[in-house]
Image 1 (cartoon, one colour):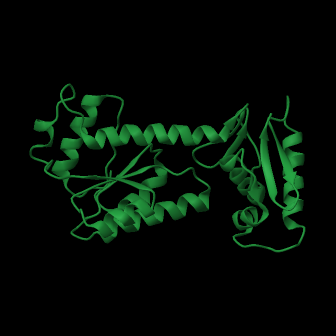
Image 2 (tube, rainbow, N blue to C red; image 1 turned 30 degrees about the horizontal axis):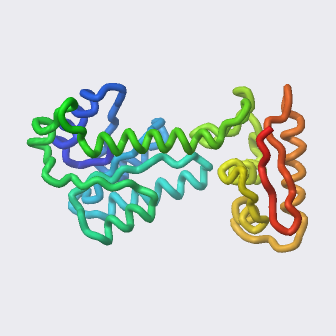
Length: 240
């Protein structure tokens, strides 16, 4: 949780403790959160936009996180924006960064816990957190099949052993194929993913695809997936 109102953090922590199975780590600034983020392993990130009176800090963190996740090939962590900023522009910007939005409204630090009763009324933010965790698990399931998996931290493994380590382009291609399976992925999209640009009519993509096929074929006891070519269209990941 990135929130500079200590009293609010304390109250919200009590609500989560009442729900059980939640551990809340908090940072009082976006800079500190960026510095220490990768030391943890988070299911949901809760962000207040108006840190130190400026909404830029909250947005800066969200933009930073999405850039870093893409660069590290880290599976995206859901973001819940919990803020008193109710402007239409801010809400739209949150959605543009794939963030969920819940207004603080009247639930300030003084009455937040007093008004909340687990048996009477679910706290909207808690319900949003649970929904985001369910969505995260559903998304992560796309990256696991018969021992082949992409961990939340962006590492491919097969039966718990590293797979495609130090093979950056092959990892990016397999990530894209798994994310979009069973759909056919265009050559252009795979080129953009692997090289950050379309590379035209050369054989670079074909070469990487063939190397990826060879690596998959070597998996024991049996390859869990196959890559099918759709001429003139692209490639498709087949789950075996």
